[in-house]
Length: 303
Ligand SMILES: C[S@@+](CC[C@H](N)C(=O)[O-])C[C@H]1O[C@@H](n2cnc3c(N)ncnc32)[C@H](O)[C@@H]1O
Image (cartoon, rainbow, N blue to C red; front, side, top):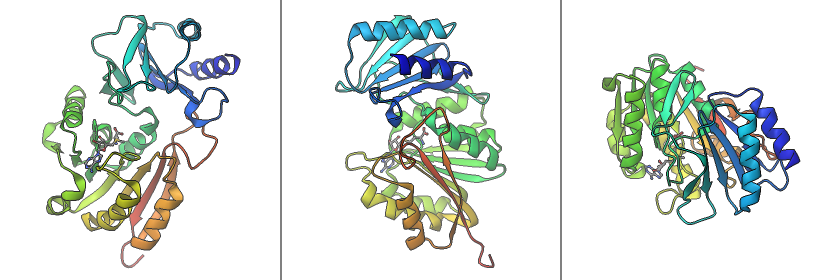
């Protein structure tokens, strides 16, 4: 436990309201590749991709509750079991739990669902959107619970169109706007399969900014090798000249170089403005792994 305890203690020194306390999936801590720990005040969420003994878990819970004051519950999400069931290891789960970030809040779904409604590693995208969306019309593709939309609107976006084929995710997204007091007239939620809906999206265009965060792979709905080229070819058609596309990838099989190559071939008028990573709370051995964010701008003709 020594390396694990040292890293948790290090992260707890600057405890935010919502933050990762241990990122074993980045392969920086040998023997702990199966483990993630997140703090969503007042709840600790442990995610395990492999089974571990109950005595090991007990020791971890004692350590965590000793490091963090005010813990109301410690939850374990068992990703190694079908449907990733969650169990309470300690305390009592409050009725409503939120991830608090930069003065905004996002409702979490901590009972028995693999996706909890919020991706902590995407804080870097929410922060970017908050900074760069003033007055903009934004298209949020693969919106899930719409945290990017909440951040963009908090940053002054004029309008956000959220698109996701999961109506349940969009319902959570709608709630996330309500609990942050965001004017519902500025936002829409379209429950659509994106690849069958380009003509509908074209009618809503042009957008100033498109943020595109598809899953790594998802059955027949998203296949990286088939669908990323389509996105890079088609998204520029929905943009104003000078508009921006922000792509997010976090699949071990889709490197940022692959996405850059697609832009070079299919959209050479796009200029790469920056590449962003999730930051030091998400250490990765391989820089291509974990979340990679690319920010492109469509050049004006005279550029
Ligand atoms: C990685 S999540 C997006 C996370 C989100 N940007 C956030 O930070 O909360 C991927 C989403 O893509 C949606 N999705 C996958 N394939 C899709 C498709 N072909 N059309 C529409 N939505 C799709 C899933 O329903 C899921 O909500």
